[in-house]
Length: 220
Image (spheres, rainbow, N blue to C red):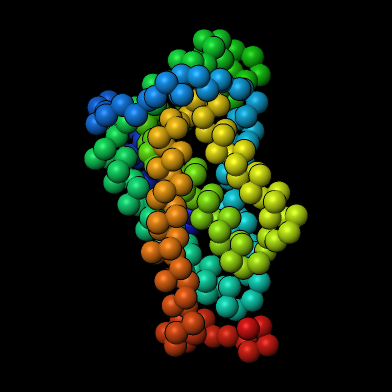
């Protein structure tokens, strides 16, 4: 978790504050559908469920020696992809200007939800770093790796995919993202999965990886 913080959270936070200071948008991706999506305060809980995905990838990656190697390769790819997306945040920023859909008293920190939105989320996460949504990209990739490891199947898979769809909806109903951010997040994640992650995961069976992290034949 310390590595995750250093490799992803710190760059994200630095860029988020930098772009807020610069305050320049390359374009405005808002659509009429964004205007129709309601603000639903309690979906903050679902939005925050992203932080359950990160430890899941590390925890279940310990299944056997083969998955341990894949777990390391997966996180290497996740870091690289996150850094690439951070470049998009810098060179093609878009301001999330739909936070004004949230009632003023919530934005100003009044009441229970006011604390979580106005005092907590908005004070630490400025309305930048929008597309593609890292919430969507990272969570989708983690679900895919859990599926590859056969951690989720049957009713478990139905539950996890349902939770993931809820997470995607929550980035809209908390007014943290545009629909454009959601769509581009899914596209980027799928392209990265097939063209970056799968080749890297398959490569963990080569001699260099096995030499680095030797396998117990009984675990394979």
